[in-house]
Amino acid sequence: MPEKTKKIKNPEEKKERYFEGIGKRKSSVARVRIFPGGKGIKINDKNLDDYFPLSGLRKKVNAPIEKLESSEGFNITVKVKGGGITGQAEAIRLGISRALVKFNEEFRKRLRRLGYLTRDARKVERKKFGLKKARRAPQWRKR
Image (cartoon, rainbow, N blue to C red):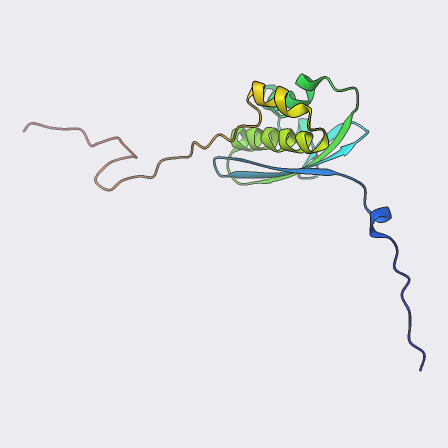
């Protein structure tokens, strides 16, 4: 019985070249892939305008690309989960910035100066027992 031989193609030919960056903010995590050439941002298989209806959030997401004023366009795909829309937008911004640095190391200095490469470590403080919220104590009564 003759054995079947599989013709293995070069895996480099099959997949497109992309640069990946991970961004986090509060409880949101964004995985960003940047493909050189083209234009457009897809977030969870939706257009940027559909995913973020508020213009301020769209500006946060686009900020690293606009500030660099690079002549080359980028096709960006994002998978984001967790948290709210503001945390997701800022996580995407960090992921795009990190991916741009992998694409071109010269972008690091400008993005660092703008503060786009710094991970904002603030998270929600936990509630403590005996208190109404994390720090809000019950109202004190003398009698």
